[in-house]
Amino acid sequence: MTQHHRPAERIGRTPGRNVEQDAMRAALRLGAMAEGYGTALPVFPAAKSFLSEFYGLDHWPVEPGREVASIGFSIDPEKARFQLVRLSRLSAGLRIGLFPVGVTENDSVLAVGEDGQLLSFGLGGSWHVGDTALEGVENLISGIAPRRLRDAEHAWDVTSTEADSPVVGAVQAALTAVYVLHHHGIYSAKRLGLTLTGLRGSGVELTRQPIRIPRGRLEETLTPITRDIDEVLAAHSGGAGCEVKLSVEVPRTHAEAPAGLVRFSVRFGHVAMRAEDLEAGLGVGAGAQTGSLHGRVAEALSGLRQMA
Figure 1 (cartoon, one colour):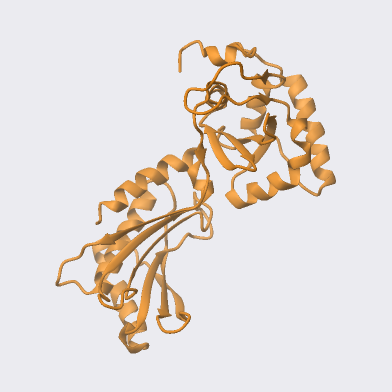
Figure 2 (cartoon, rainbow, N blue to C red):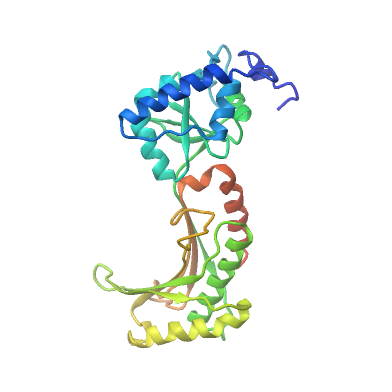
């Protein structure tokens, strides 16, 4: 991006532009429409800031884009009035607050997230257009490819020493994940979830129960957690013929990431010929592919993969 932000200036955006009064009238009218559908549509600070700067601006492409086709758009929240119910469902699915700010020439809705990012939703899917309002607008004008928002599953093998039992290796991996997820401000787990699933037939879940993480240094918590898991396995033939999975559970309160949006687990027993192999995995929901959480999750994934 250049210092003068020339792409946005071509559609009338100038430094210091402020049309807050007109923008807020339009936003409040849209909010009243949303109430008619039984949907709340608060104007959070990032949405107010975006509309105050860009409300009333339109773009119609006259030249090809740099990476993808330049997209025409109109910044007017009332033009998204027919998509309010759908946008409410998308917001709930992504678990982030959204406010519609306009539409594109292909009838996609443009929306601002609570972190100030610009997103696009249409028949082609959900997309992260830019980390900031200005970046998003200029990416649309310049034809910079957006990032698709979709659930992702990352998996990798975990290496442990031959002296370690799979239970010890799984607990070590899970406690490492507890530290990494906390260090990157994603969530601070207070317990692990232990699940045993039979491998015969359709894979019946045999047991699911929480394992508390004692206070203390990670190396001090290894033994009591391993003992608790061994006791559960002993009640189920030592875990023979089962997939054994440990998940790092999101606390119900004081979690930076909504429950289920970022999920770590490690499992063994899932491969019949090599039942002691450990596989770790990080599930990342679409809502964690945008906003401030996206960078933290990417850094956490890099750290977690080092355990391989």
